[in-house]
Length: 463
Image (tube, rainbow, N blue to C red):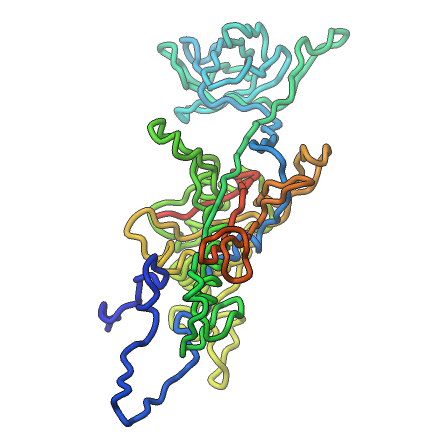
């Protein structure tokens, strides 16, 4: 058995930029003596069609008064180099010279007197050593091995990534001078810019005076027999959805040819794809796959609580994975608290689980809606792991450190202009008296950007 492909869900958009006659039923035959039985109120066959809610759930909105938003994120506290070349020597040598080949923003952080662990990338073994003769210009240092046997491996030539170096402390003799060099804290600076989002609805004064026989309804409570009310309210709802989806999907304009058309911005998905973690090739369906995600989170910020915003299939996959942990789960008879009986509704779903960290699961309508991310033939996103809570950042408006959610929206505002959500009416109809245009035009505008702080703690699940 399978769902038939026809009939299917409708994808033809209801809003169209054309005359409104097609939006009315005009096939009444008044020459007939029989009165049809009509339902005046619209039936909401697609339920709540809005897809916005994600950023309202996990973030906050706050003003900014600049074309550029910048923030600093902490770098690592400890130094570790994974592409270190070893000077050619035989096994068992007491000292060895290493060259650090990792990409650096400044000089190496290894200093004389520090104690290090030398782990051979070939798997040949590891050593402990103390550093001397550091040359910052060349990025080299000498490792003096503690072990009697000396170097755990022999090198036949100068390699570029023979060993991984981890600094774990230091050692100095009695009556000696202190550390010769100091280290400077270094932040990573990120930025984003707001984009201007606009929309408009227009209706002629004549159509405003036309009454319909269908009582319209919209998600925000609009009702009545004037069709333009429905179109205006749906334009407003669509614009409010775009305020969120633009922040999720926005990308910087990197195509020089089109640079004059738009600048772009960094949306949530783009930020996570560039600076976060990507799980590709389908959904994690086993504990082993989730363990690999958890181990990656260990290497990032180790945020205790995380929320999984997922599409329906990913939600089912998580439920099935958790149910399989119970010995009777394969039969589908005992999910949840494992105490279902024949007199109660069988609960086949889970709201979350704990394995190393707390994971809470929620469906994300945006990923399911067939007119949005749902059912894309390529480039599909199945879910997003978002760390819960907030982080401390320096706020240039307040001039001090402040707590901010990992995801938050900055909108343009000052003492004289607030561009968070602007709407105004022009024309000469519907109460507007701003021009000689025999119509009412409702304008919408917002200028905003999303800040994804600590993107290294996010995970995006892609096909």
